[in-house]
Image 1 (cartoon, rainbow, N blue to C red):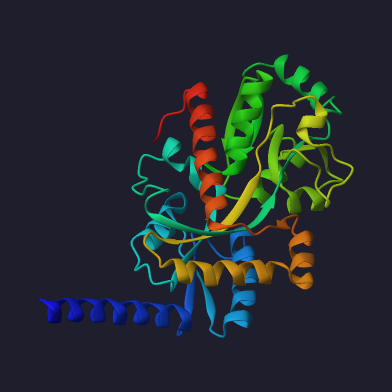
Image 2 (image 1 turned 45 degrees about the vertical axis):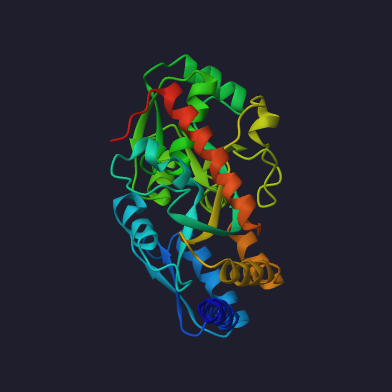
Amino acid sequence: MRDARRVFLLTALLLACGAATAADDYPVKPVRIIVAAGPGGGDDFVARQVANGLSGLLGQQFIVENRPGAGGMIGQTFVAKSAPDGYTLLLAGGSMAGARYVNASVTYDLLKDFTPISMVETSPFVLVINSSLPARSVGEFIALARSRPGKITYGTLGAGQIPYWSALLFNRVAKIDGVEVPYKGAAEAMLDVVTGRIDYFFSPVINAVSSKDKVRVLAVTTRVRSSTLPDVPAMADAGMPAYQMPAWRSIMGPAGMKPEIVEILNRAIARSLGNEDLRERFAKAGSTPEASSPEDLRKRYEEWIEIFGKIAKEAGIKPQ
């Protein structure tokens, strides 16, 4: 009996040592960061900045792999079903917290099928309107929109994306009856705001900056102003104190990752985001680098799952 107990204890010790060694050696081969969108967009940009930083810090290549399609479902599901060994990661957006409320094909459970690792960045979206409209503030625009029920038009980038949620929340809080016009990309939607084909759009900061002389920029969707657009008020300062719709990106892995590997990645991400060159590149793109603990990232997703669920319920949104 004693011999069996000794064998059991020795085996457990060896397994624990083996696990610790594997974590200590991580990574021993290239790591993929899956982007559930095509190349050239904001997700792709952020993932490549993070990948470059991690490659330098951890001594292995971190490779960005684009797997677009089905509103992000292809890439997200691929990571959820991958081995939890730390070699397949996901550049995850905040919009994943609301995916199940608009997309009937969502098969994953965000809180059960992924391992939170760290926040990467946050950024606002920007309410822009056609410059020929007789409104120069959020309050004036709301009054104008209310006077044209069912006639005022707004752009989105498809159900479930942050511009969609931004508009949905804005319309509900402001009591606006608008007509949605979906677009494949922000540049296309912004062009139609410029030409007057649509009246308003919640734009990424970088698109708003490049078009600010052609559209009227009214407010950002975060509680504080953007350093990229310091003269543009936050929505809370523009008469909508309850309004908040930030965008953020994070790094997640499949469920079941070893805590030791999560800690290695978490520390490396925090270090990479402290690099001044990286921070400047993010600032030019209109975003702010922001690391977090895995626990705080999980809490953020839990909070926003509830927020998106409430918005969807009050707006009568059903998964399609």
